[in-house]
Image (tube, rainbow, N blue to C red):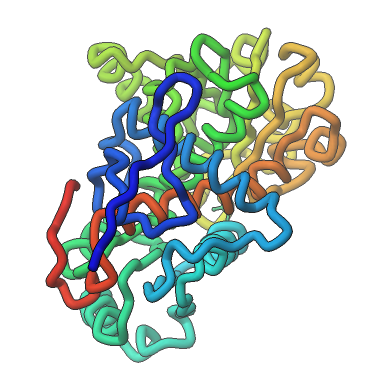
Length: 356
Ligand code: CP
């Protein structure tokens, strides 16, 4: 027999899920079965993720940081690309929610023998997966997986396209460091925009949350973003693109450096790493242009001495470690919310299909 419970509310009357109980037992207003990108999330969806992450943060502060919410569900983590933060924090998050966790490294699976993505996804579903967390080097791969998987797909990063959980943990960390809101605050994302799925997802969340967003990098690495900014302004999602690092950093509230993605970098985009570090690296002198309280962020992994100086990465303004820690609470929140859109029979495909 299923029992429905009322979720709690905060001081403003907004819903806060009671994360100690199973997610499908309380109506919290979340309707997305998959998390493929953040472009389909409304402002109220973002607020619900943030409030649920706050509730998970409270769980993480308990002597035993575990709730039974996902007991009986299997979360399969299928990564076709290297990862430390995303893969491990999804595993920790799922275990904290009492899910059964299966890890598949593509290099040591039948993918190495030529098995297709679709066959692999059908196989993990036949082996009992209810939720599938995947990373792939090809943009759009998680969308294909979502077409054939009966449960929920969570995108852990696809090609240059999207990294939705990174953008959500970045938003959570900014809100935490800025007193609860990014609205009207100057947020600068500096570096290799061209190859970055992180910036592409952050554009959606930060413009939805009302930040004054600035993107900065050398001309070869900001290509295409001016056109996006024009389309964004027309749709009420305004952001700035500049190659002038001083203009970008002046009076910033948040500075996020992005990794120079050497593995995706075609020759001719940068004269040299040394030249990049000299002209665009986030050094102490450059950071002095921002507000004295500005948060320093980096999604990792870092090339210290290239896009960010070691003393800035480890300095008092750095919240880079907090980003990693917050990733667990935010991923717990997302697993919890998505699990609420279907029961433990999601893997058989017999659940109701809810949302996008
Ligand atoms: N930020 C990020 O995606 O890091 P990993 O590649 O280590 O998961």
